[in-house]
Length: 414
Image 1: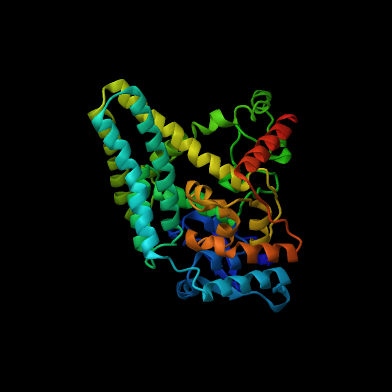
Image 2: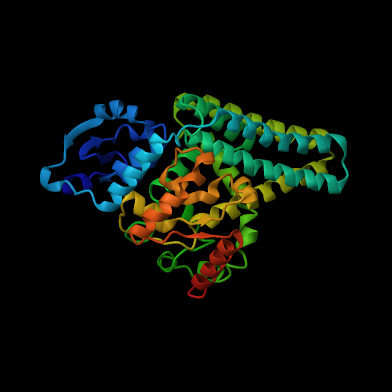
């Protein structure tokens, strides 16, 4: 592994899968899952590869094969890895990685009914209270369609990766939600591969914790801040937390829009990315200003942006914040467990969070459809207990409290 570890950067990237070495230097930019490969350059990616890819992908992987690890470099498979690999195999045998078409037809129709209701309201009346309510529904829709797009882009729905990307990405992501498919893939898949991980200097590798200068998620990340002005701001990160979340969708929308029209998008994907992004703003602006006077149309759109950001972000922060942040490599399963928190199930939580209240199970098995995740909790918890790893499962209120308390503790050190 010493030689492999030297090839750990964009343009010079090797990875190990099942003790075989692959040169992905030229492939990474064409990788359908985004630039996540670079986060694993120079490392063993065996379990990350298995978690995200079908077995048939190995046929393509063989074209990148450049050698095998020496026998002396092969790491023995520990009990934890063996147990979780066996658990995954047992879930595959039970059919937990197969989606229920009727479930997803219902989810698409019921989710799109939210935006249809929102639009119907502003077509019917311009009463400010109804417009405000309609804007909240629009924000709720953008949250729920985000979960739906998430399912498709994790290839949980169709067997065809093209259909998952087109229906879940370009239609539900770009067109309906206003988020760039390829921007999301790069950001989110990297988060899955290295949750809460930083480099040796505690600069975040996981983009989801790269939130300076607004939020510092650990003492070590805070220690990287040299600016007195930024430290002064971070002292108020706990009371400013919810106001900051209200701007989350504005930030994500801007990042998506600029990424979509940049050269970072592969040439073969630019047409669909840009077409559906333009159409997104066409329908939002068209309904907003076509059905309502200017200021009320603006109120409708801003209410949707603010509530959509809040509804999305409050779920995100439950999952990984105030959990372990580390700067030394961990095996795939341990990394997911120590950085991830579940939120109790129930009809409302399961719906509002898009099934991501079972975040640990989703991180362990990202291609498993959300309607199967609850079936796996007991077995996952038992394995965590067997290997001395904490299985955190709390209420929504407790999760929020833990995050705010953690932010306050870090702020006191600023």
